[in-house]
Image (cartoon, rainbow, N blue to C red):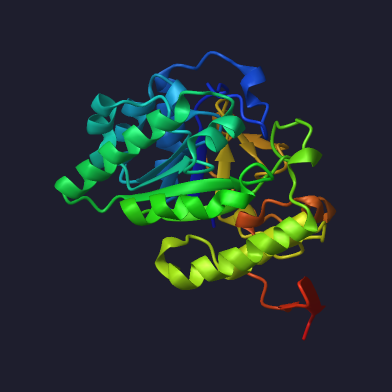
Length: 317
């Protein structure tokens, strides 16, 4: 049963990240009534609990502030996934009480590393300024707003990813690591130079375990999720069941419902159907070459150990 709707508001981005080429596909946004109709259809389903404004940069849609409020008026929980560079204090004031969760991208607390990855030399200070203001406002008015950060793990930042924990602890945030996920929806950038080597992945694993032990409540993801990241960098197939296939619905700006995070195949169009199709989807052979590790169930049938400075995998023990 679908419970989370990921609604894409735009096909535009203001950054030029190393691991992404979405900035090439800039398109004008559709009118607000178009998106309100999608939200109306989602509200009729009865099972959708969350609307997540995602992908590209949602704040480049001029109607985002009204759409957040409109979603809240329909009794949805609302989350936004953003690079956090466009919003300002006035707009934060406008939406903070209507948000339940926010995920923003920051790849290092070292400014030049983040800006190296995002290819914009002004973004770091903007992000930190917006973050500090939102945290202060959240604490002042005693909101139960969850603020998360997402770190895209790659060669440029794996050596100093621990620095991000200073940010996490200072502002009481939660953190999520993603491997540099190049093979996915719309992305066609050259990616091999960004992947961690086996040794680098092993070093990340050791540091992660230590930080997880010291800061257990600061992590969104489980240890098993990070094991899948290591498998990704080691080119193992990810065979865990994909929980996203039957719990998430992904909708592009043109009402098209997409199969999943990795496969942009259009299943149907909401404008034509006017209801959510909950037909159960099955994994197929394409799923084993998808490395979106965060959408997979934890791996209970694998036993992992680290011996002699190597990451060893033993199946079904």
